[in-house]
Amino acid sequence: MPIFTDCHLHSHHSGDSEASMESMIERGIALGLNTMCFTEHNDFDYPDSPDGEPGSIFLLNADSYLYELIQMKEKYAGKIKLLFGVELGLQPECVRANAVFAKNYDFDFIIGSSHVVHGKDPYYPCFFEGRTEEEAYREYFASILENVKKFQNFDVCGHLDYVVRYGPNRDENYGYDKYKDVIDPILTALMDKEKGLEINTAGLRHGMKDANPCRDVLKRYRELGGELITVGSDAHKPEDMAMHFDQASQILKDCGFKYYCVYEKRVPSFIKLT
Image 1 (tube, rainbow, N blue to C red):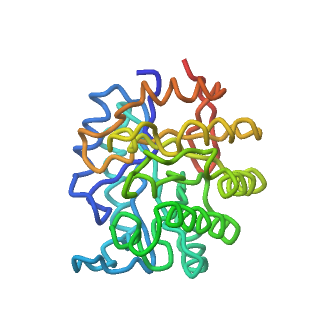
Image 2 (cartoon, rainbow, N blue to C red):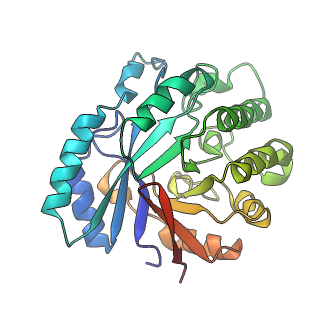
Image 3 (cartoon, rainbow, N blue to C red):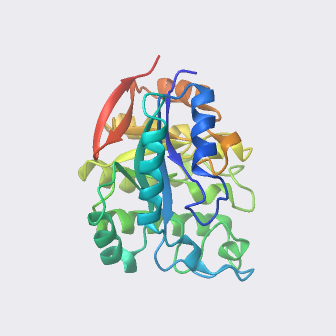
């Protein structure tokens, strides 16, 4: 496996995972990873789900999370490096709450992700009701641009085309060229703010043709001069960790990247792709 760090991982400290932190770590060691970054969810003002699940499940108890992580760091010292990350759900109305939360903890790494658009998560079919798939995708990309412009304290933009995983036709009719008028401003804003991009292999795990974002978006980011790229499986259970990392490595090289990044104390290190 050419990539030895998984920078997007969830355990039972995230509301949508039941995996123990220790089971994730044991799996990481078995896979030959040398570094893992847990990025537990924190989504302020996440709506209650259509099936009645309270949105409060995505409010992270960061103190409990950090306490267990410190214990695991001590237990597995010398076997694997464990980093303290978070995946912040970005929404315009949560800018202040996210800023305070991010400042209150010494995170190694912060992913800024757009999960909720005008009160709805594209994970649920109701996001797509009453309009075309393209209209829904465009609304999602517009929300990312708004979030990136309004919020500063994150390191990389998570799964930029997350919406495509759950669209009625998923990525069948999706491509960079069709949406470049709304994607390019996002990439430019990330560059202007010296923020990076994540290649998230969950898209491949969900049966899509490509990772999130698709390779043409990654290629365009590189053409614009972007070099800050992290690799994450977005695993919520041990068996999904580092899945499709061989393919991710090849995608990055095909798009012109020579390195991927690992953040520690919010500072990126560049690791050569082999």
